[in-house]
Amino acid sequence: MMNTQPLFQPFTLNNGVEIKNRLAVAPMTHFASNDDGTASEEELHFISNRAADIGLFIAAATLVADGGKAFAGQPEACGEKDLDGLRKLAESLKNQGAKAILQIHHGGKLAIAELNTADKIAPSADEATGSREVTPVEIENLINAFANATDLAIQAGFDGVEIHGANGYLIQQFFSGHSNRRTDEWGGSVENRLKFPMAVVDAVVEVREKHARPDFIVGYRFSPEEPEELGITMADTFALIDALVAKPLQYLHVSLWDFHKNARRGADTNRTRMELIHERIGGKLPLIGVGNLLSAEQIVNAFNTGWAEFIALGKAVMINPTIGTLLKNGETDKIITALDPEKMDHYGIPSRLWSFCVAGGAWLPPVKGKDWQPVDL
Ligand SMILES: Cc1cc2nc3c(=O)[nH]c(=O)nc-3n(C[C@H](O)[C@H](O)[C@H](O)COP(=O)(O)O)c2cc1C
Image (cartoon, rainbow, N blue to C red):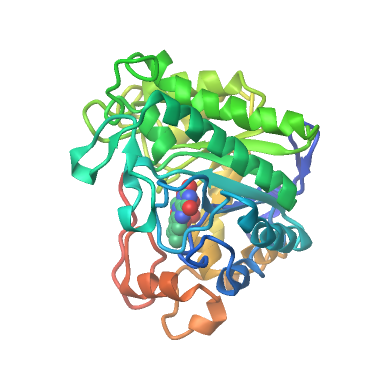
């Protein structure tokens, strides 16, 4: 029988906080918050039974400022009005025994105009998405917005925040030579492209210091490569990692659709991104790995590579709400790898997300009786 117990060793972060096991729930946008970004019953129901026997539960990408909303029904951490709902989310996750981490996000050029009042902005003007170049004053406001969201997360009782520097959104846009073509101090060289991500990290850490909360966890998520000619390469990502490990962070989280995918360029393309990233970090911070790990065997094998201190699960948690407990108890034969479209009530997936799932998509869980190919990025 497969041994799932290695996943259940605790890990102590560099700020002394113990995470009870090596499982993380990957952040998952649920398209279910109220229109004003406050938490809804549907969203609370979705997370109500998915955090048992999970170490870190990273809640959905949560908007930090008007202008950056990128999903209908996206949660917000913009102001006082959001506190009540954020408290309910944190409380639910903590009551289930997980560390509650809020992912803080701004969509930049991927924001949806109709969902925002403020202009669509990006590091550089982008005709394809109708975004204008953000001004230096607005850049300072954006950094402050990430700090403000962190303040709200602390007030709401979250155990930490994860800075969303991945999946092509604002922070990644600043780091990308493809999206960022600025000629001022915020663009150009790798050092300049790192300025915005690092300013966000510093601002978030400062809020933790202001609250005298060294136990508050700060993580950073990044996407290691972009396909575009001037986009992020593994070599860029190594520079990002070097800058991040010098900061007082608690973990790094790579965003991948396939845990085992090899590097595309800028490093040895015969080796996996996971292995290369883990090697570069060199034990200075723990790494969360992720990507199409659906069966117990895939999850255990990924952990046993030694390339990640934590394994995050997204789709597997949608399909198996109690996967943490099933893995802990060795009930691996009960873990299923496709949604049954007849069983909406069983899963408790919010209705809009459920309709996306049933229609099918590479980024969504496989559905019984339907062909499915994972995202290949
Ligand atoms: C429904 C859904 C919503 C997602 N929303 C987010 C998000 O809010 N923030 C984020 O960083 N990644 C998001 N992702 C990506 C996941 O965190 C994860 O990296 C990806 O699904 C691959 O892991 P998996 O194969 O275990 O699902 C989302 C994925 C899914 C399926």
